[in-house]
Image: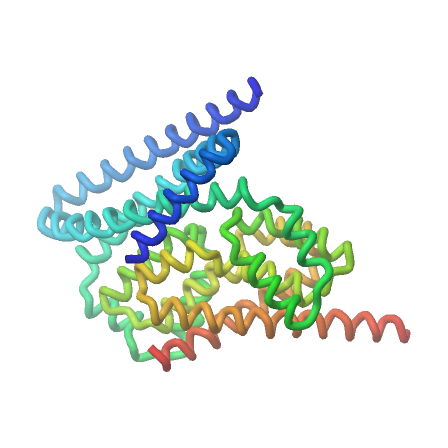
Length: 158
Length: 184
């Protein structure tokens, strides 16, 4: 359903761009090809990783580490993992989905995705250079704390 | 134009080389694992195939959509609208500008820095930056696809609320510190 909506709106917008401005369409297309190529290796790694998780890790093990016996330590660990991990968030989402399917609880998964996008460990050098020490530290520390609060609320509501 | 084309060709070439290296390593690992655990690998790869198909059904479209947004939405637009407004209108504009499907977060830092130099409100710039990093429109679509509508919406709503609170908290802290330093 969502895939249909995104595909159809992309095709319509692309046709519109070709009609309006061929140069723009070409530029967008080249940009997309390069971006897709850059993302593809990680995508394949994640696809294989999902298979290995299902093939090798028994659901009981996933349940016992990421299951619904939510404790704060588990959530903090997931949040730290999300903050430092290098996976692009676009491909991290299917991985997160597969973990839920394999028996993980929503709380640590929410913590992982939220810090993955809100806390910029990888981009820290650029952020420090552009925004300075004070703003960067405040932003990332608050983002980390709030990510944990968000995931605990989601855990209750899901 | 000529150098531009060469640059693009190089980027594509490097991308393909990287892809080939990844593929080789993965194939070697899979074959050696298959040698020892044939049933586990077959079962796992079935699930991999399902996820692979789902990802192929949505990712190319998302990436082209981002590329299109990149050429249609000039960065100057963001500059123009974010600098001036404050209050509720400022918050809403920051969120809208942040959710636009344009570029990775490292592009947003220089924009944010420039806005701050132009004396835009700290809270608005922080909200804009946070939304840009966490809540892109097509990304939310992908999240709905793989984790369900309820989860994605809950996370989106609470993330936006948190980012607004964080924006105002940071602004308060920075301004208070500024005041204290001014008194001394």
